[in-house]
Image (cartoon, rainbow, N blue to C red):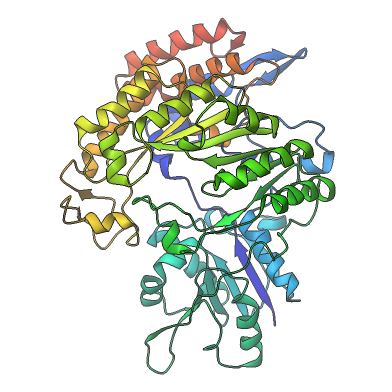
Length: 549
């Protein structure tokens, strides 16, 4: 049996639209904005003297650094073969480990080739033929993207059996099977107990009704059939590892989530919360270091710092292993200086936190189980520590009014320091618990045939939320010298100047953000030009110049 696994990242990131009208948008579309060539050159020719040479500020990110979304930690002693290696993708090497353990030969193709077109090497079109195509939907988040991926497979491998798995299809299997007859099976939940027996049954031409974690359309009746859920034992299973040596390796220490935030569908996708022991995690980090050259582990769990009993055992173990790492946490996990000190000693380099709101009423609506005071405490602790951090916020959660959002806006404009993101609330997931409050907040979706981009509730509608988002980001950009929105940085190496301090790099990054966004923030071309000229003068004070000045 010939099997093809298609797995990787999605076509873009949710806040990409915030670059509309900016120089960064023009820079990403070469030749698409000929009337803005001058301002594009202002950005592309920014440079500084580093180690006796000219270093451009905007350098495309290398493969390995591309998966470090939280921090700008620099790796040391990167081996030459690691510098050009494709960064491992957690879903890809996890599914590959399942297939290899079952002795199933397979080819791998990145989903990036679907969005960006075929190329050479790993992006070259798979030749086939294939009996089964496995498509990961982990980084697919709307119907249009899902349809595009399915069509891509059907056009190239029309006789193959298409099997979906991952977060999106876990939640949307009914919708997908109704809309796409070409999809034969969906693995919902853990793939470990389902995928090997499914492939074996397909090879033998046997029925699949006894295989757990499956959804499919009965060929005779057309009805959707489901089998029971079986959960993988994460402690007993060997943790997967990528094939080869990589300076940065992503990691999964748990599935599911113990919390019930109403904006999150994690519990619906994996209702049973399971996690690896502290001893297993420390052993995995050491193995990745010794066998795969890992210098940095990126823990992708929704909340790596729970349960607290595991964290207390884990941190001393990681302190001994000496591998740097980053993770996602909750604000109330960072209660005092002792916790932050222990994280530093354990070689934690960066944390990502969802504050979501600085208003207790909104946080209560979200069932976040965190108060604004805990958010502020976490911020104060992190801002006084050497740890890198990234904080995300939401505008427009059901029940939130512009008046309630004002607390979040004021915090961002007047107090916050560091990188952050502000997202408009998304309603395109029918499994989110927020729908339980639909009547309470008069929650309505005005494009039921799409992906719920247009909505309203008692507090505001989606148009108001997007306006508040843009207004807040503009005020933060030009009134707060210490807060930096992270959007365009995804595509470039950080820190911008590796020989400068963290503090000076933050100042320079903020100025580059203002320079690139001035055209979007100030629609009058003369005003935007004046703003850019002022920013360029400030950059000169840091030894950064543009050939256009």
